[in-house]
Image (cartoon, rainbow over all chains, first blue to last red; front, side, top):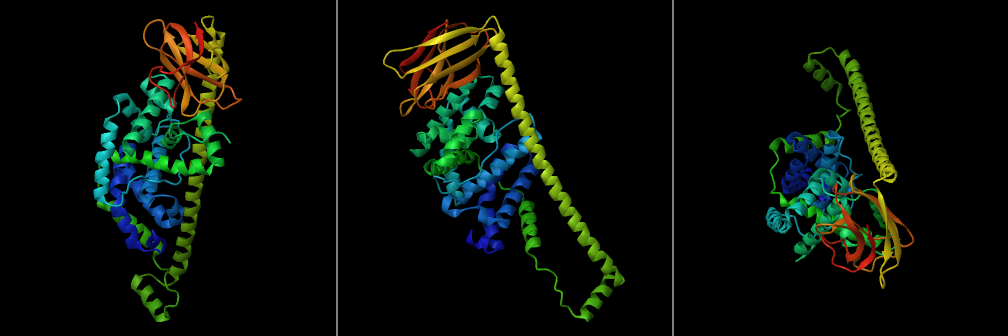
Length: 170
Length: 264
């Protein structure tokens, strides 16, 4: 990032090569539109180039921060496309990733680990987590989508996140 | 300041599912608590791992080409202004246009660029205003829907009100439930002592047949009442309502002691 701050184009190119793949899969999953996903991806890196000081390396990880920014933009795009979806203001802030995502190898290892953790969840818990993360839905939006009582959805998500936390920590 | 936020609260907040008062309370706490703000960064990290359940997908090469062209365009040096008059003449000659054209075209392109920039800025502003108006309208509609539901619930002759009785040896509190079986709607109104560390309260509807159904997990703020409405399965005949103490975040079925109980 220091080299990006010094306006070194090759540094941005390296960061793009390292993280564009993992960001693309999430963007495409959220917006379900290749062109929109490409626009967001380009814009995220362009903004990183224009205002690298927005990322504070002392407060967290760059890939985590890029992922949060990308997800937020994709979900904002999704909400504009579908005004019926409500949702709250999304936050951008420090992100402390518990794993290293610097290399393609570590990204692939993590893929297996996270998939394994998700697969341990009962189907309805996993579905609720995916609606929240990949569609940006709130508790009540998930309840409306699934037809389950709000309390059930809340309990389901709380239990799911607790299980994921425990599995990923172990 | 109230007790620190739990991992569960932070994970759910980072996931973006919290809304309304729940979200407001968490943000108010975060604004005043550096420790929880730091813990939120870790929660964001945990939530971000969900993205890693998808295999990386290489974007088309043209995206990077466009990106690098975009940044080069921005960082390209401005045209040199100290070229010799000979260079300038040859450049104009080379373009095939009379020299005086440049005195018109350059300001014209400049003006066009300014107009484009101003229009783009206006468009961005309008987009933001539109998004804010949409959010406000959505919130107002949600409030109106809640108020309408509440009026319907209170006004219906089918609605029953059940006072929940304090159970001995449990945290102090008082609460009542309004329930309408035909509308499939429940309203809770009550005030309880803070839950012990690592615990949450959970409200249950105990039907005449089948297992209890959760109607909300909550962590009261001392001195403040809790109030919410909940959609329930229509036609569910209640035998009783109960609040139990459960592990933080609630359980699929009651496991802890009963704190308040009311028979329907």
